[in-house]
Amino acid sequence: MNRRNFLSTAGAGLAYGVLGASSAFAADSKTRKRHLYVTSDRDQTVEIYDINRNHEHLGTFKMHGGKVGGMCADAPTNRYFISQQSKNTVSAYAMLTGKKLWSVNIFEKYAYKQPDRISITADGSALYVPVKQNGKYLILDPSTGERITEFERPGHPHNSWTGEQGRYMYCAGRSHHVLYLADQKTHKVVKEIGPFSWPVRPFAVDREERFIYANTTYTQGFSVGNIRTGETSEVNVLPPYERTKHWMTSHGGMPHGDHPFSHGIGVRPVTQEVWHLDDLWGYLNVFDTSKNPAKPTLSGRVELFDDIKKAWNRYKTGEYGTGNRWVAFSIDGRYCYPSDGSVVDCEAGKKTSIKIAPSEKVFEVEFLGDQAVRVSGQMGGVYGPGVV
Image (cartoon, rainbow, N blue to C red; front, side, top):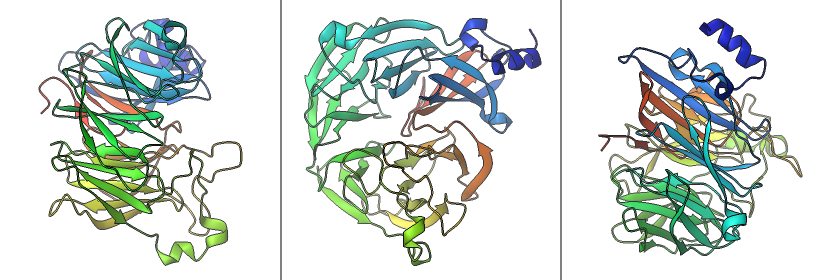
């Protein structure tokens, strides 16, 4: 089947997994491909885009489940993993075909509910599953889905981050002021950062694992955690007057549980920048960490709204708006994905005309031929063999 016929068939609703490895993936062993994997809760699919071809839509994999809690990928095994809160499942899939390799229902097996934003260790040996309703982190074997161990994590375990040096797994509770750090080898909690001034929401860690940059529930800006000393501080930032003078029409509301003021943050790869999402007003605020990573300084803003008098990503009572407010990046740091379906050119500092499926669960896979060599995390970070 040639590529044109394949895309036509995929567009008619067939998944890659039904067709097997397609010509959209096939390439010689020297060709580097960059594919963006994006989950769609609405369609219960994973949408795949070719970053090298202006984010051309390549096709669709089925997810076999409900609302996604999180997703992550492992380059050496060509696998990605999805947790689904409404189904209480954690599943493994083949990157090239979308075929489901294993699935475990943690409620049926362990009486646990709501697996959330999962992460895999840097060496691919363990899958960390925050279990929101049971105050635990469940550690699974990525090859089988069997339990390795678990530990207590109070405050509704929610977001996790894999340290790029392979040192710590960072484990947050959305209703808790302290961030737990687990050793990626022993799976034991070995350090605590905080307490922060408010509960920890989305967060990112610099590549060297020196500092944590975190949205905290009622901080108008973000918090900074020093991993070595455990100290915390805050960076406050307000939107420009030119935007807030249209108060009645331009603020977007707060859709997330516990109503955080800011929801979305990331460390842009290959730079010394922290990107912070002011989701009330529709700005990506860019902070420079090159002079002092403990005290980032505002260096620019990207407007996500199209009309300064109108809201970006407005939240309507009882439902989500066009996106769920998040910050993810491409591996090379060129693109930012703020979860409303927009694609931001980081160098130009503005939105492009490109549109992808709205989602806060996004990662990139870089392939050499048909073998994945690097992947990104859902809140940033770059992982793969030889990546240090």
